[in-house]
Amino acid sequence: MAEAAVKAKAAVSADTDQELTDGFHLIIDALKLNGVKTIYGVPGIPITDFGRMAQAEGIRMLSFRHEQNAGYAAAIAGFLTKQPGICLTVSAPGFLNGLTALAHATTNCFPMILISGSSEREVVDLQQGDYEEMDQLAIAKPLCKAAYRILHAADIGIGVARAIRSAVSGRPGGVYLDLPAKLFGQIMNADAGKKSLVKVIDAAPAQIPAPAAIKRALDVLKSAKRPLIILGKGAAYAQADDAIRSFVEKSGVPFLPMSMAKGLLPDTHPQCAGAARSTVLKDSDVVMMIGARLNWLLSHGKGKNWGEPGSKKFIQIDIEPKEMDSNVEIVAPVVGDIASCIDALLAAMGGKWPAPPADWVNAVKTKREENVAKMAPRLMNNNSPMDYHGALGVLRTIVKERPDAILVNEGANTLDLARGVIDMYQPRKRLDVGTWGVMGVGMGQAIAAAIETGKPVLAVEGDSAFGFCGMEVETICRYKLPVCVVIFNNNGIYRGTDVNPAGSDPATTVFVAGARYDKMMEAFGGVGVNATSPDELKRAVNTAMDSGKPTLINAVIDPAAGSESGRIGNLNPQSALKKK
Ligand code: OXT
Ligand code: ADP
Ligand code: MG
Image (cartoon, rainbow, N blue to C red; front, side):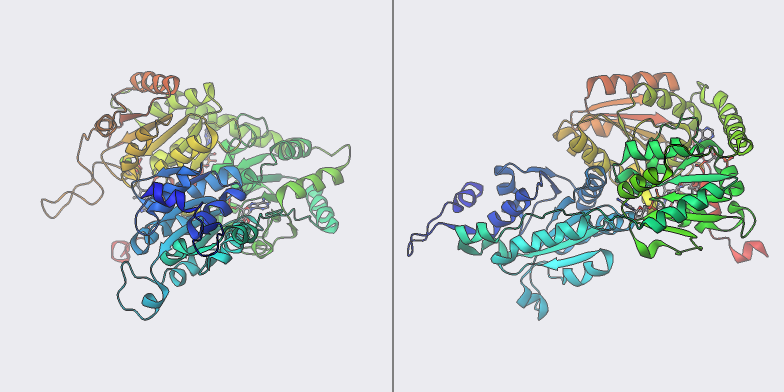
């Protein structure tokens, strides 16, 4: 099958002697022309041969066990590379499996293209019950930035170009590309086909901020008595690392990194206020956001976390004009791409810039040192079973010693505590649940991080979080990826100690006690380790990171150690009856 299909490219029409091509090859050529090197997906009707042919033509095809994980891989590939990550699925059920990841990419502003095969338009539109019938384009539309369908082989070049430009230009996001089964087999003249392809020029054009906006922003920043810079994952995405560091250092302003912006400047940098989060949010008077939104993760810029109402002025740098004033008034909006905005700010700051008031800088430093000192002894314990701090203490040292490794992190307590404990030293090394707090991103992210960067990956996973994507350990073993998965196994969601008061069924948040996730890795030829103390954990992770062999470490955590919903228990609705 595959061989016959590959040969079709060189087929010659018997009637006219013309060289022919088909939809399969035009799509592959269009993607390659635009620099696509990797596709994440799951094969099946009608895209099985497409995957084979793409592989035969040099595109790296990563076959997953579930489309959702392939989609999360594509989404994070987009974040890491600034090129759209590509996810390929079959029709209806495969498409729907990929859709959560497409929506996640859009929500997180990651460029991604979900390409799904689909059933025949004529049959779908008359609802005549085709194989995997579904109006996929209509369903995808509200969940992504743009959605397109290509019906004719001659439109493949322009369709792929539109999808790429839509994904990466302006605010990046998810794009859906619908390819009906009939398209793949359409034949056209090879020369005309080649001419119909489009190489996208300047897919994400620089968006230069207005000089007046730059001046306004600097005037507000200069007037501050207690300034703060918040770096978000948009700043990490922008890959303007040196300029951002120069700007932050020249300003002298304390900075607070959002989760995936950690490492843009090292967490150990003297201006880092990560360990003084509540203090800087509450007490600052001017806040400059760089690629961060005032959404739930920043309590919408108001309320008790932000001190007295009216006590703040906000400056915001973002590529999306509609983001301004989304939650509170932005007194100095700077609309543009972050690289251009930061360059313009640096140029306008001139040679010298006044340092922020020393009492503010010192207050932040004091609070930070207090919190770091408070945490330090908790990280040194060698308890067995482990608590979160004991286990994270050793992982913190391992990441310090291997700053170019990529850390993937999900869970509730496993996420929230790891974020605080594990310092990051380089940009785009921390990947996690993002804007939606979604569980199950871990294995897709780990796979894409290894593929796209070639660096070793340490995935720190809650046992529940891992359950959403765990079958992909087979994928990790199959492609022999340098991924070390550490499962914080506390027998459940948040804690493993809940009891059902009314019957013999287990409580809703608990899992099989004492499960051995390490055996899953062994089943596929990887290394499995059961670690019951921080010392054992440290040895096992170091061995895995040195060897680069796929490894899964079942880290036994005290089931009583976690708290409900980690650090966001306040978001759980309260029962009205309980309150009475
Ligand atoms: O300043 P103060 O004094 O306040 O102190 C702060 C910092 O200054 C300080 N700090 C430090 N101190 C010392 N040293 C250092 N280095 C340092 N760094 C910081 O520490 C504190 C806290 O700092 P932090 O973390 O920065 O601040 P805070 O206040 O927590 O920040 C607020 C937030 C909102 C920004 C932050 O909490 C945050 O980013 N949170 C993200 C939360 C999130 O997204 N959670 C995931 C979702 S939870 C829930 O929905 C889950 N589900 C449901 C579900 C989901 N999500 N998805 C799907 C598809 N289906 C269902 C499920 C099923 S979680 C979950 C599974 C959970 O079970 P697991 O087994 O996986 O995990 P376990 O819980 O481990 O069992
Ligand atoms: P975090 O969760 O880290 O706070 P968010 O995802 O909320 O970050 O915000 C990221 C913001 O960055 C989005 O508003 C997005 O429009 C913006 N953004 C993404 N890339 C760029 C870029 N290259 N230039 C400017 N803004 C960007
Ligand atoms: Mg758990």
